Image (cartoon, rainbow over all chains, first blue to last red; front, side, top):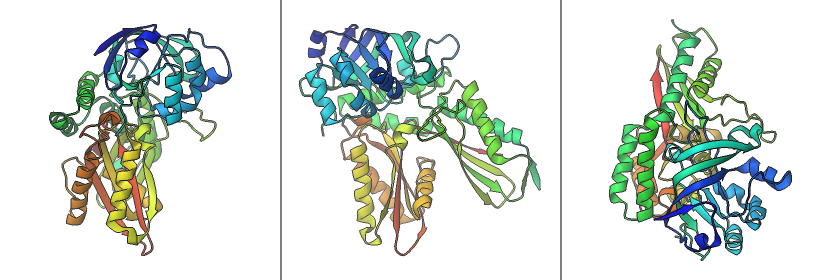
Length: 170
Length: 279
């Protein structure tokens, strides 16, 4: 098991191999389908992409004093064709679920980005590692808005590493 | 004639959607625990631990099990001796509206294939109504996630393709879906009927109790065989490999045209949320 704190460096990325469990602490950003499309076509992101981590999630509304509601990953393949420019700008880790296209995997290795999976459906478990949450872009998108999360020991697994490893290979 | 008011239906639906979104059925948890005991793949085993830890946290009532709190699907069996004081669909949708608001559940329904404007209250539910004998109203209520639904399909096979054709289609579909539908999954198969009937059969199949067996020995045996074969595919929890791809296979059948063999595959993720209410 590897512990990792944001921002993520190229050295951090080199240390990750498919199948390993990783616990992430620090700042991560939420974005899914519509947020990616807007980032691609409308405006510059309101956060530093270089060294960043993006978690594909659309949480449930937060109850009471909780910073966020249930927060499990959504299927990542839908972001395959709209991620390239973010990787070019230094996006280092992407967290979602399920496999992705071969073309995406090649691009990811080229830009030294790593794809991790969190346990799909484990939204309550993952939310329990979120210390704070703030919407920073696209509030009108509701569950799909971009949030800045502070997390402690957010659990995931390396799916595709930059050395050619692939957890889904059967 | 027995009267049932809309308020009673609304309250039942509201309470049901909140309850199922925070609690997994005990029989499902037991299946996951049993699968974990037999799982030799280390990553797969760690993922099953995550799933078990998740349901304990969710059961305390602050976080739903999954962020995708689903589209509400209702199979309503309306006794013919009932007089409904209000419109059935409106009463059910009001329950969904109240439950998704009061339960802090995600509103995941958009109103148009392309405009995709969120309806803000998770309505409308998808409602299938049958009129049956008796004077009670049975509601089978599910919160069905989008990830697993997206990997489902209907295919019209030729009768000559037969049982082998069905097996091949199911195994190919589950293999190619990989981790996307959040395995370990429950597979619902609808065999027969026509295009739309097969899909309904498959959907109702995933709502069956996990431990039951089909009355028809040929179908019961196919359920067992597919369960074994799917778990040999090596997809594993979240697609990472291992022995735990599927927790159950349930098949429902219906007579069909001499020219047809419709097959519908409805995939249910491990967060299998459904309940039954009788009013």
